[in-house]
Length: 253
Image 1: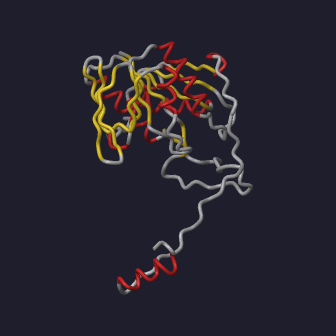
Image 2: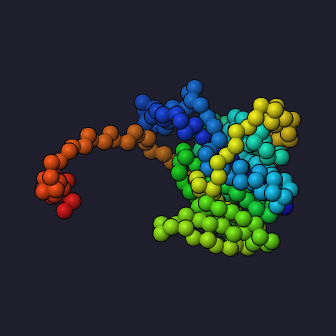
Image 3: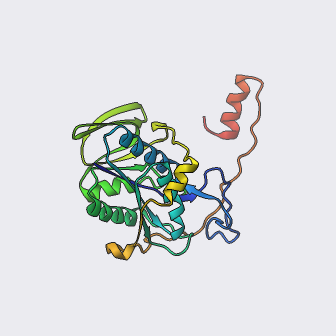
């Protein structure tokens, strides 16, 4: 069985994002980029399934600018077998919307015929949390979201997912789309020998036009602003004072 893992190139989670002075977006000049953390977890899980003998091949795919090949090389260094880069934008500021991404991924699934798609539950740059669900709908496959545990049992996938009330375990029919959460695993670091080997692993380069998908944006970002700073808190001497402040100043009771 093949596993397909979509990965996205995003601003590194350790970087403090700066908004452009004109409010047109965030400043990406000389900013460190890396693999979306949720996607990194998805890659790790796919590799573990291969190491367990459940999966025969792990394919990673990224959609965006040419620079995303660096992200794919990281996934290959972790242990993925081959990569597909779909160049769908020329500018690093361009963010391909979830529906267009899902349509491109469907085309890749149709071509590669994987039995499982594992993806991060969301990207940390736009927090859409929609691509996996859209892909499952387009494919007509079952889906399991927010996975904190994943096991393959024959033609079924057993997924423990995080919900508001705690943990929910479900069994879905294969093929399926699984979106993963933070507590699923701890991604490995790519060793230097594996980083060198990754340079020789195959990476196909395609375009959105090759799959007949229009990636023209449907949304327009009107303005980007930094969140307002939080006011400093105050200490109260008694419960009565706390209640008075909540009632008179905060107006919440």
